[in-house]
Amino acid sequence: MSAVRQVFGAVQRRAFSASTRQASKVTVLGAAGGIGQPLSLLLKLNPRVSELALYDIRLAPGVAADIGHINTKSTVTGYDPTPSGLRDCLKGSEIVLIPAGVPRKPGMTRDDLFNTNASIVRDLAKAAAESAPEANILVISNPVNSTVPITAEVFKSKGVYNPRRLFGVTTLDVVRASRFISQIKGTDPANENITVVGGHSGATIVPLLSQAGYELTGEQLDEYVHRVQFGGDEVVQAKGGAGSATLSMAMAGARFAESLLKAAQGQKGVIEPTFVDSPLFKDQGCDFFASNVELGPNGVEKIHPVGKITDYEQKLLDVCLGDLQKNIQKGVDFAKQNP
Ligand SMILES: NC(=O)C1=CN([C@@H]2O[C@H](COP(=O)(O)OP(=O)(O)OC[C@H]3O[C@@H](n4cnc5c(N)ncnc54)[C@H](O)[C@@H]3O)[C@@H](O)[C@H]2O)C=CC1
Ligand SMILES: O=C([O-])CC(=O)C(=O)O
Image 1 (cartoon, rainbow, N blue to C red):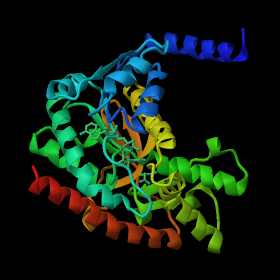
Image 2 (tube, rainbow, N blue to C red):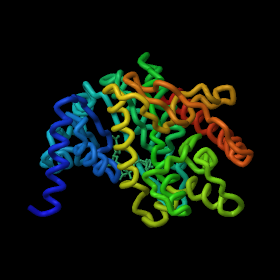
Image 3 (cartoon, helix red, strand yellow):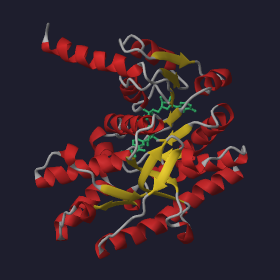
Image 4 (tube, protein in one colour):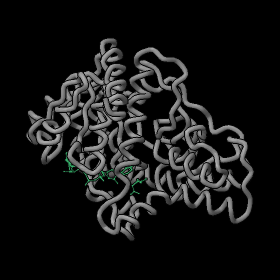
């Protein structure tokens, strides 16, 4: 037997034995996109997922047919882009991941995506509020700082808002922060876990390197922080107009979904960074804020405070809060004015 077959066989055996213990429907809205396809693939490989439901305005049945040939136990269904297709795709879901929307091109900010993505997310949020009001909603579509508040407003307007079940996916910022410090320090990135707080765009992304015991200074610290804050731009530039991060984002989204499933299935101490309805800076006009969050069977279990930070990090946080407040308000205003 070849080495590849041996490894794949081992993965499969583990997958089948674990999957007998779980039954979780996971839905991906935007499943045929640059993120949606590899994200769906990774979810198909996750034995905690028993049913994978894929929706897009194009090609979801094709993606489902392809992924559906993978010999792990979960079922995969691609739904037609119709109201009833969307409804069926959502019904009974424990987790709904939303990577639907347009990505950036060089020269654009995430906020430049607002005009297109705000209404896409609003409409999908409406469908989710109607057909899966108790699901965990994981918003990937940018600008996350605004699309999460839009989703909250939609759920509120339908009377089904549960702040413990709405998450902006900021995992990629932590993945990058961990990878980038390992490149400087020569460590194994798998062992790094840099806390990143704030939001998910430019100056609202605040890495707290000091909490991991690192003491970069001067230009090296500035460069590190800039790379974490603008890591997305690095990929946008490198792809030269063909989109933004998709593969690393798929990994980050799959990791977050896996953490939620673990927590739902009773595992304690599952902590992920995420942009949630948070008490931490409400007094400064930020109803949503990303920090480390302990997950549980009911979604958000405990929101960790920012903790001890340096003066340098405090300055970053001050800038973050100013920008974030505006991004959040923009989302809230849009949802109220365009119900
Ligand atoms: N939160 C994060 O860390 C990250 C977020 N993103 C964001 O994720 C979003 C998606 O990025 P990509 O997958 O690269 O874009 P893409 O253009 O490759 O895929 C988007 C998919 O959404 C679908 N779609 C559009 N409108 C839809 C609707 N109403 N219902 C269902 N599906 C719909 C499209 O048909 C397409 O297949 C972008 O807004 C991007 O900025 C990207 C990377 C990281
Ligand atoms: O940069 C973008 O537009 C996509 C994104 O959110 C990221 O890669 O962090």
